[in-house]
Image (cartoon, rainbow, N blue to C red):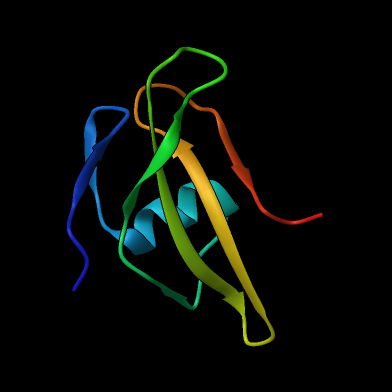
Length: 75
């Protein structure tokens, strides 16, 4: 079970964090981890989560804990 984290003032699970990044529900998500970077928009802490938006795709997404910035490792 993944550890909950505070993102933009609310507690989220790994699945909820992946959904914030993806913009829609995901099939499965791994544990949340700290990314080794600061947010390029506000300088806040960035979290990372690996997830499966579909059966055939695995994505690693990053999301700022303080603002709406996020990105994925998709090309």
